[in-house]
Image (tube, rainbow over all chains, first blue to last red):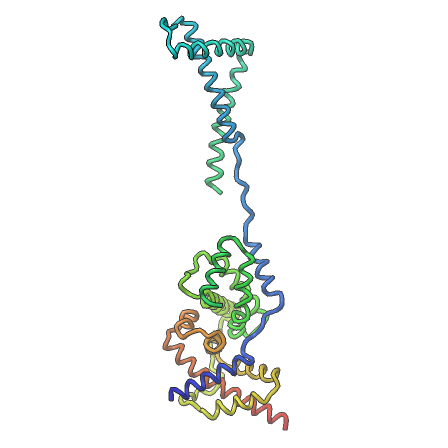
Length: 138
Length: 196
């Protein structure tokens, strides 16, 4: 009985293979791929900050120099100079000289211009906040 | 295509190579289309359903379980899509037996004579009668017989694709095979009658 069943099975398979399978149209695959490609959403342009990482480093260096300049000016003004000669004194003297020149440059700049770096810092902070919000959403 | 080959292509598609998906489409499009035709009995609708099935499979490819065959998964999507389509367009859809239910014993002579007679026909006529015979079967039996004999799916795989139990699939397979041969015999007798 089993052998008979197997025989019928084979005959049925052979029979169906002769005409049982339907064929799609010639452009079937192309149509599928077109639909699939249409599904792919365009990449959302990632929000780029106004100031890049490199720019941040330059600004930080600049701010550091300014800080040194203002701090050193304080030293000059207070007359707080070390009495004994040390390596740190050498550095301090160099910094003081540099800050003197920087102070000279800055003293020629009108006071209201000092608002510019403050405003810049504000916008930089706002820019970073915007970036984090928009990138979270995407 | 082996399961390993399928998985390699799927990995490529998931990495972003959409064009690789074409290999899977080309391999299984005819069988997916055939499954849809068996249910819908309309080639235009069936092609649309088959395309939708491939697109749906692509959309859910990241959820595909690599331990199973892509072909079985695809046919399941196609089968369900076709059934849903029929239910929407024909609310009173029900599988109805079109042929005599008497299929309790195997008729060896029936099979052999029918097969021999078919062999004598020209290819296009042979194809025509085979398809007519399959279309005369209830939709679920037509799908089962197609998946088993043409796609080479096991009873277990067919059970997963159709949602029927394995025992139910076996019973339907057995019955549909008998019905197929009886319908072919009837058609061929009519053909001979027309010629005379």
